[in-house]
Amino acid sequence: MAGDFKVDTKALDAFSKDLKAAPIELRRELYKGLNSVTKPIRREIAASALVSLPEEGGLAKRVATSSITARIRVQSSFGVKIQVKERKGKPVDPDALDRGRNYHLTFGRGLAIKQSIAEGWFARPWNEFGQDARRAMVDVVDKVARKLERGR
Image 1 (cartoon, rainbow, N blue to C red):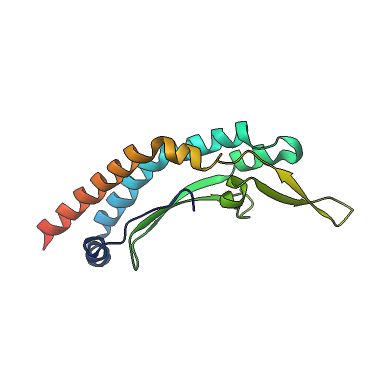
Image 2: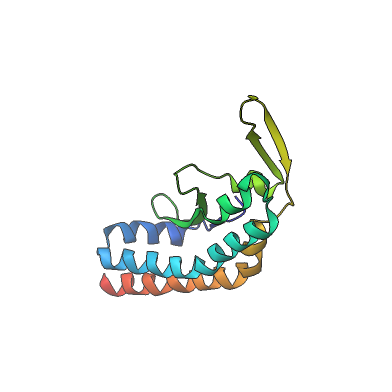
């Protein structure tokens, strides 16, 4: 996915294991820190949707007002993924939209039509904030990892 940031190293795998056994406060600190790092990216994704996606059919507004969240995974390996879900709980496929594809049903006709979209609306904000966001995420992880080390 365009909004993924994954690092699969032995150190992060060990960090994941240690974090599972750590006090809940440390996990909360990690989640809070990573959420704050991704907040500007998520805001920019919503703004990019309004500018880049078609207004016809309400796609731009639907995506811009969707729930854009950072899903933080620490189970088997560490990762942060930006997800987009409509308020009604329906997932939005930002990858397909980012590639310039949207299919939607036409009411009363039973047909699906393809809508052309400018490519990159989802990846652009991530790329814009990418290096700074990655550094900030590593800083958050390092801070929590140092606290885990001290707690042993």
